[in-house]
Length: 72
Image (tube, rainbow, N blue to C red):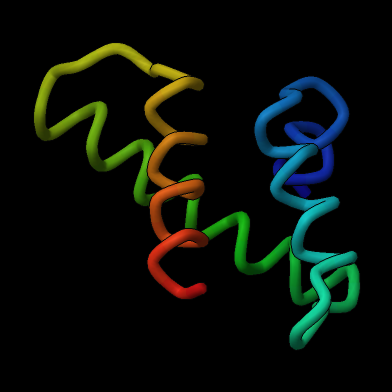
């Protein structure tokens, strides 16, 4: 599975996986987290291809931080 390889190489996705597994409210099990991250990867690919922008780890993690703060 491609996501398992990405988790081994990409620190941002690894951090998101860890956050999914250890979040206080409604933690995911490993397979649920991998499926959720596959969806995230598809959204990242779509944004890169449709907008013609480069991958930005800061932007991806910044979007996650914004959604966490909004939920709190």
